Image (cartoon, rainbow, N blue to C red; front, side, top):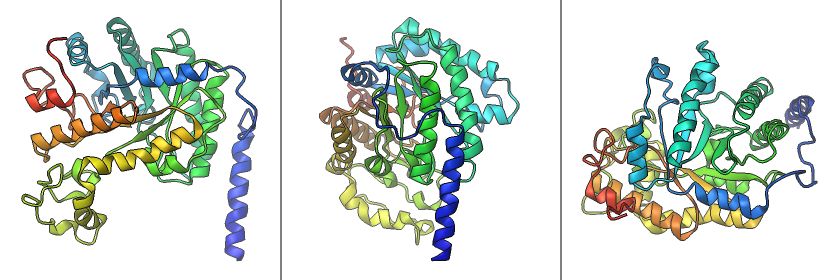
Length: 378
């Protein structure tokens, strides 16, 4: 009991300290002072549908990341031709700061993407990617994140709120959900003191988990889109992904589940959750399972009357066969459409790309053209 009380007191003290730099009460019951109408935020959420992430400025393993230009006019023209409507731009701001890189160098790239999206008619999400926030450092890390967003908010204050969105923090880790809520509310509050009309995008802890979002209590701000990432069944979408580990060592997994070609369990996956998922895949590897899980967050959005966004979905393309990737993307797009949930694919030109090679029509398989609803006649 003494240990329990000690932890309770420690948690209470931490939250009181966090309140010290909060500008407003965290859980005010009052309505936001100035927000667009409810219909506008739902409309803005839907305008992000059929989007794609461009994983370039988030590649922390690439030391020369800021010396390259990944998005050229040809890319915007190709994305336009394929029918994409929005672009999500993950940016590893904390990583650049840790390397002593001038913020202006990174923002010069962001400025160019903003300009190109305006030129080609894409909605744009600027996403704070690869952050360092956790249970142990949130008292010092949250103010750093706030400072960055204050700079960005002032910089882009004149960009139309219908066209530019701020995703305040990508995939908060497995951390105390209450601490995460404290932190994100303070970040929202700081942005709102500068920009009352920008639509913000917020996810839940445990890496934008659908399950954590289903337990989240919405914030007291009507101009927020709530995001989640969906890679279920992970056993299929991340098969062979080297950065995950032995849990996903089993490869040759098709979608949907097919008992005739189902591979043997890789010995490396034994005694990991990958072994459990191996035996569950017979039940999970189908479109109905996707719908059942997505229905969880759909129900949550309906409960709070807030817009939701599937901010990432896709398939690691090194080991999954082409036809299975196409079937999965098609199943996801059809299911999201049926549930009226806008979706953004991960990603355009990296290891989850829909292309077999560099982005081009020649490298886009026929089955993927069908999966993404490409219509050459348009």
